[in-house]
Length: 166
Image (cartoon, rainbow, N blue to C red; front, side, top):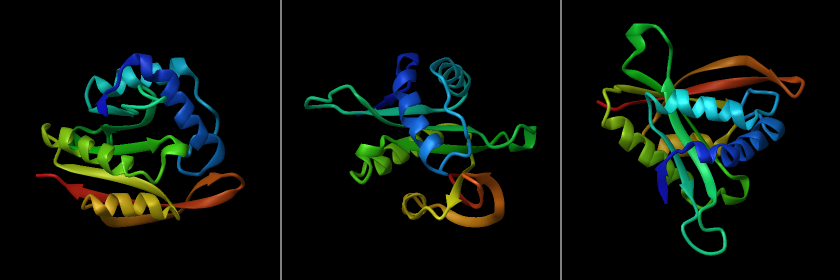
């Protein structure tokens, strides 16, 4: 089940996101974030953009948040107001079940209802899963920054994919 985020989802989002911070280069944040910080991000982002969560809808895990996705401003200058950047994170033990595709699709559906023209997705490389998810949704690679981020004592490249919605 996919639904809009609620502040009560902050702890679950924190749990999902901190795994990526602490164990992967998918996020360039380096220190775990707290629930209050996630609550503030939810308030700020969801005031202007779609912020969605997926949750288990049956069985013993019913109601558990299994992933989240949101769009946010690409840049703050006014000429970028019709562009957005998106992010998606799936609970590590729920990856590979197609949930990312469904969540990603719903997020794009919500963006199409807005005046958003261009959507951008930044991917730390290599990341075959994220590249495949974006390209399956119609995104095209538009560029790559080399050695732009430094995490876990090494340099990382970031590729950018774009989808024109309208």
